[in-house]
Image (cartoon, rainbow over all chains, first blue to last red; front, side, top):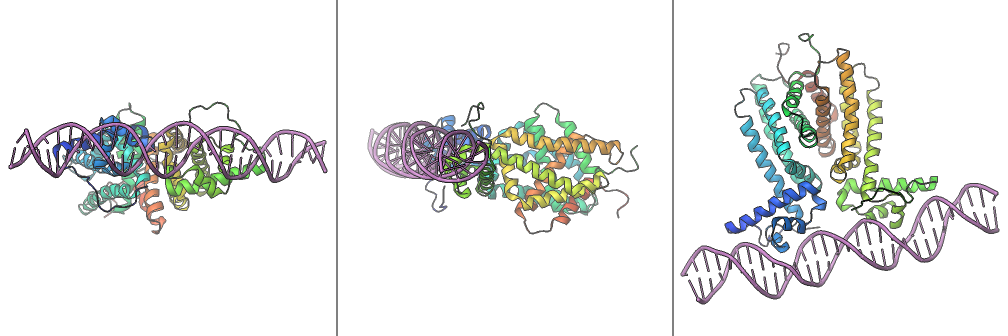
Length: 207
Length: 207
DNA sequence: ACGGGACATGACTGATATGTCATATTCATT
DNA sequence: AATGAATATGACATATCAGTCATGTCCCGT
């Protein structure tokens, strides 16, 4: 499809009016792609939804792929902010884990379109998708390593753990955030957290 | 795109020659879609890869979506067989868990194309994707419930656990099966299993 | 060895979407 | 109120692709 990366002809808006239009297009794209998927959402659908002309699109984006990349970054920023706020009061790594998991599920349910857009980016531009998760994984990893150092959690492979925990959250977000949109999220997060914290293996404490 | 479901004109092959051609097309589609993604893989690309004429495609499939559905089913069958064999010798649920996880990662690394096809089905036909995971989840759930009954594992929400474990495996399969294709899988599976079985929380046993 | 159902071909049509471009409008600045 | 840079328009040329169809080949059963 699009090959060259050199010389962005216009791209970044120079006035607040331009910035506003760019945002309108991004918002429309989020809705359109989230609803109908990347393939079905055409540039003309998006610009119609944004109430701008087709040509206007190419003032700010080089292609449909380009918008999607931008949307993945947007999702990363928003989710990060949301999780930071949600885990701010946590007094330990495990408390942060419990709160973060619930917050993630709530975020997924509140932002189904963005959620789908990120998942779809995997097939449109694997490198942004990769980077998206890598960023989260890096943070996650450091948090786990720190908690190990503070003797809050058992020692283990922090990398594998970080990715495993992300996968767990993503699937639950899918299932209970996008599919089963009515079941209460708290019990789900609690049940998952129980497994994360205590494991499946039976011990002597419980009957 | 395609709307009506009634009256399949030909579809199912009546001779072994036909069945062979159908398989050639399915194999080609698996490679093409796995490599280039659903959008980029055109019918003509697929038939070229399969070395049959374009029209032949429509003897056995109604659309590109149709092939994808078939490929998801194929993945389900193959993976199920693989996991059944891998966990056959396990003497407990947790042993099955450990073996199954490793087997899954190995399967993902050995079948990257099928793996991607399944993930992409999510955006082409959410219902098959949903069903695919639902089938696995149902089995998983019963296994967990049975293990609870046999007092092998702690009691808990089997549904949430099943989906959480699937998500964990899927993400690790992605990361260590498709992205990091050289790191040994055994340690990854072991590390993940350790978290699943024992949890993150520190206990009195370990120093 | 021939009749007929199954299978196979590939050129062609219609529909749709992308990205361009000549032209028009806005608006801050002078 | 004139200027020009930034922004906006929408018709259109171009490309691509899905699905059809008239025609032809294979091969089993008799």
